[in-house]
Image 1 (cartoon, one colour):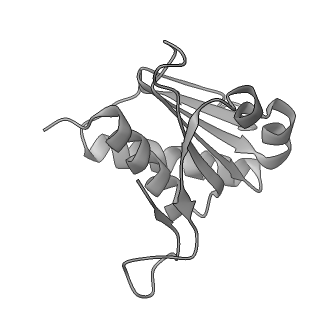
Image 2 (tube, one colour; image 1 turned 120 degrees about the vertical axis):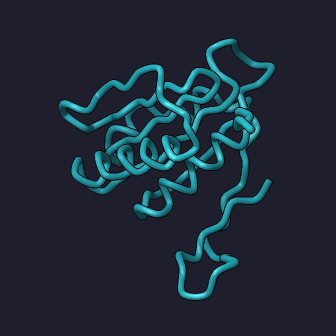
Image 3 (cartoon, rainbow, N blue to C red; image 1 turned 90 degrees about the vertical axis):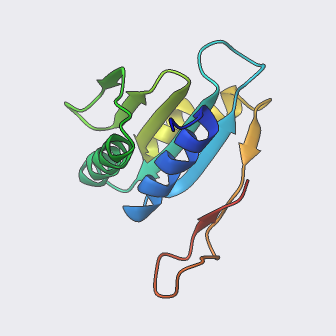
Amino acid sequence: MPLNSRDLAVKAAEAALKKKALDVTILDLSGLTVIADYFVICSGESTTQVKAVAESIEEELAKKRVKPLGIEGTAHSHWILLDYGDVVIHVFEKETRAYYNLEKLWMDAKTIEIDENKSDMAGEDKRAIHY
């Protein structure tokens, strides 16, 4: 069964968390724009981490048989964009994210909360996503 856009956004966020992405946010843009239903936004401390996070997301979604329509920004890795149609994933270096501030631009969007202190698995990353 194919993933709906919300589940795809959550899977992408979970993959980002596995690579210790910072400030993972899911914005629900449905009803606000035709660009996408969801943005997943996260940060890395370095271009190396940004690239690792983006690769993790792509690999995890490929396991669900979902391939991106396009990927941009891998040459310099300050901002990598993975376009999955209804879900667009932005993986930023921290400074680049602060500069573009997509959360402010889309402040009317609902946010899917991510609790960094909870987990269902002992010994695993302590962050969890709440629907």
